[in-house]
Image 1 (cartoon, rainbow, N blue to C red):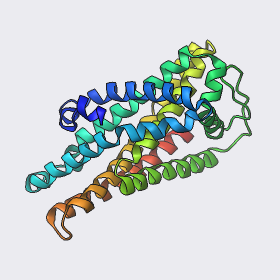
Image 2 (cartoon, one colour):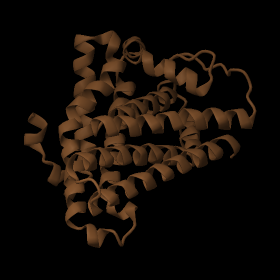
Image 3 (cartoon, rainbow, N blue to C red):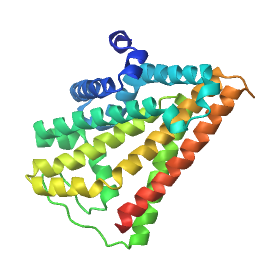
Length: 275
């Protein structure tokens, strides 16, 4: 694949920030290509093609990390699993940020009618997430029915547990299937925030951005941990021997990451609902 000839998994492992640049340009290319071929389905095609484009590279990153873990199992078993997978967490974080910035930029420069057509699935998802009765890129948001804090907490928790579970399952079945979840959520967040800027509500943009800072990182890291747990477990099952120390370490790390992901989901929902 062309992408693999430009940058290798080892290079990204050494310089995780390179993933931000790769993700940014891949997302831009995918959006523009999708628009010219299937304009009405760009919103759905976006995460699919980004996932397909990045899968060979990210799979090799998972494989490289699992191979390093196998070689250094005796040494790595004595340090925390977060430190063992620090680079992978950084790489997925940069992937999310790069994809977010690409969609955010497009939202600021492209015509409104085009955006409405391209990102209709994301806009519909924003309606469901925010509970708005109506939501358009140029129009005003009308608040939906009032909900109690407990109802909001339960709704957010259930929704984010589904996303985290889906990220884990996709990663386990396809190793890098979590890229779809991260790309999809990056596009939703970018579209929602860019809407404020397009309407000239710069003050509201900064207010809302500051408002989501306490809980959004918790939710994003929950997805990351769920994704890494599934991806590492998938590669471990393929490459390691049953009953071996290396597979035991992989299983232990995967379970620990999944538990932390669930904890972060609940904590993020509590912060969002009650603070």
